[in-house]
Length: 430
Image (cartoon, rainbow, N blue to C red; front, side, top):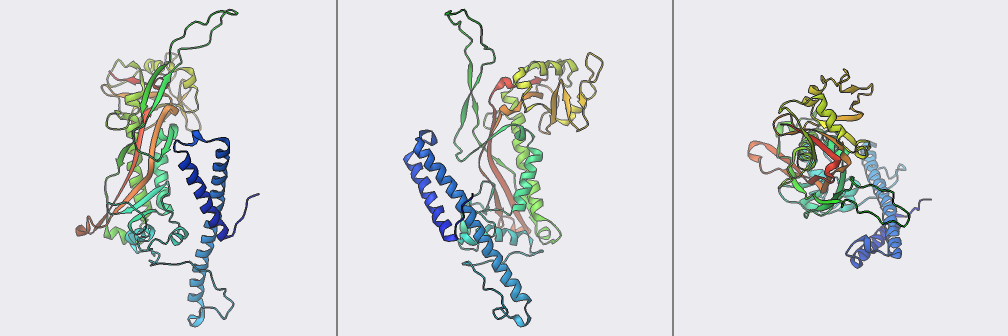
């Protein structure tokens, strides 16, 4: 049964849990791998206490904010401007407002909304900001004023949930390979490489009783470079006229455009990145199964050779796919296999397969042209993404003041690479 706390008890338990976790981290700088069984138990207990107390604190803050709004509504509604004290209206509990800024109304424009949500004029009142849904340093998205990041009066608080939702929706639409790959979230942005190996050539063999074991082929070891790079959405300029349009949903507009730019960029490097001074991916890390006879088109036989070149362990994996862009898919639609049937099979649910492998399209895969790796197939669980820190949104309210515009810019840090080259193979155009 879940424990319940008073607000004061929750704050005390929260601080105790944080203190315990800090002490454990200080005593074990090399990470959880060095924890003893007793320390692991203490850490787990602190994490559980942190989660339980945080829920109680957030509930209390929601109640306080609701009470404030109820009081304001009651005073505005009662005749003669009465504060309701003589009419049975309960005295609400309130929280400290250091230097409040009014919640923006429809028509106030994005500048007012950004100022409010950034918490610039709240003078570090964390309780009030949390009550308004502005949580410091979440892992979703951070807003910063001008060209600086920070907290409190200089930015560093999360953006409205509607904008975050739009960014997430854009990720789901444009991050096709990300949805199939392995995503790592890390807090540090230093160069990051992980070892890879290919041991598919080895298998167990029968030996005589008390017989000697024969030598196998040594696994092939290499490294996958997942060093994160800064991906910049470039500046989106918003006119004052657009900001003042009460019928225009500014959150959706900003989230859709900047989100599409970021996730398209990440997808591009996962498809065509070189891995040199930029993220890598299919083009730099996948194994070439064959070179097409033509520089501009593939044959049914070549596509079948590609799928057949993939080890059955990878070909039958849950994230096994054939990836190409829509133009290449249109070319393959007309290909006929040796048995006289179309190579591509359609199903009622919209799925498409070749040789039993499902097809997905990514707009960032290259066309069939000289030297390009236009079609990839295999287990995309071995395409890894290293995302460092939150998405950051910068509000440039002074840069374009002379032209009556506000600039908004988003950026993220991301790296990508294939961690097992033989798990994903490609057709290389002639």
